[in-house]
Image (cartoon, rainbow, N blue to C red):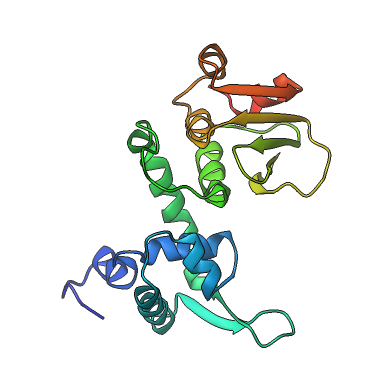
Length: 208
């Protein structure tokens, strides 16, 4: 492991997670434990040998652990309790990135499951939930659901439960609404979003 040679918490943290791809691997494992192939699919652009090297480094540092999936013999990767504590700084970085996201995705790749971290991080900083609601998210591909309760926000694939409302929009629009960079009124005026069901529920969650 490379060292900055500095007795500083930030320097020592970066020695563990500062290499390219490391925090994105942690992002994937914050969404949930994953097998090697699932990690490779969820990290567009990473080379197979580089992923193996990064996982080995994170494991030796105590951030990641290998374990058997279910009752089978297939290995999956998961965060250790210490590694899972990276959720807070990663969510802070997601909130800090809001000005960088306003230009849209361009040619960058996007995976819907990344919203599972981004939306709770953005919404928790600015929205107080008074009643539990579930909003469907149709952003291209399989439908997702945003569950809002007094304890926080969760984004998962739609599990078939009844929805209070459904939002149809491109991911950049949903992220803009969650960050407060785009109002629902402006999004409707520009034709960027469609809403089915109880619109007041959507307004309560994506409050400007």
